[in-house]
Image 1 (cartoon, helix red, strand yellow):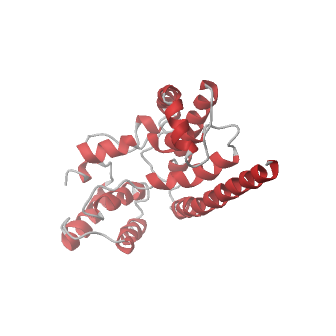
Image 2 (cartoon, rainbow, N blue to C red):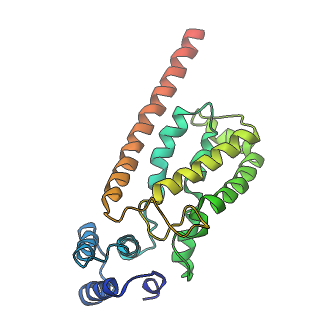
Image 3 (tube, one colour):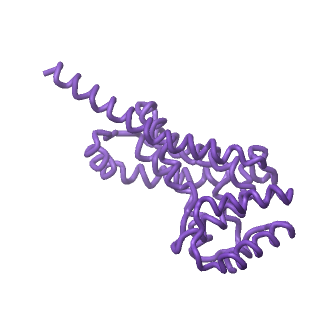
Length: 238
């Protein structure tokens, strides 16, 4: 119950959630994917479309017997191939960390039961940029250690602060752009209270999830091509 009360919902959607959760599952039996989408269909039929994202998040948080952060790992899909294609312009390690760092916000909301939106201030370009600057400073201080770790994967870089800062901002902004169509509680252009990127039809959810999944494969292909090219050039040089 304490998880549901933190979500802003219209009266109609509250009724549906209570009937579906309490009557059928009583918050004990885990939800599977088909059951999650069943809730969404019920919401669409009730014409309460603004709360689809919130209910989807509730469903995912309850669907297992452990806390679950929706979409967070999927951000590494697009960031992997973008970071590899722009390897000379981006600090890869910073870009990968920045692409998921702001999801510390929904993590804290779920774990500590905070009375705040899942995607609040950190999921705005204003405060997200501040987090990006802090992350860039940390990654710059750790760049020697990071280089050693990334060199294991033949992705070591000796980046200056300007490159690291640009990579950090780019990673955070990419995260916000991917989340903005999915969740109605995001206000990316804060202090503006609207989210013009939000898709109330729910079509973008499947599209973005599919893109993220395919991006993992694209990233692997680009990575192995990059390693193979460097190996061939090294042999030719010798």
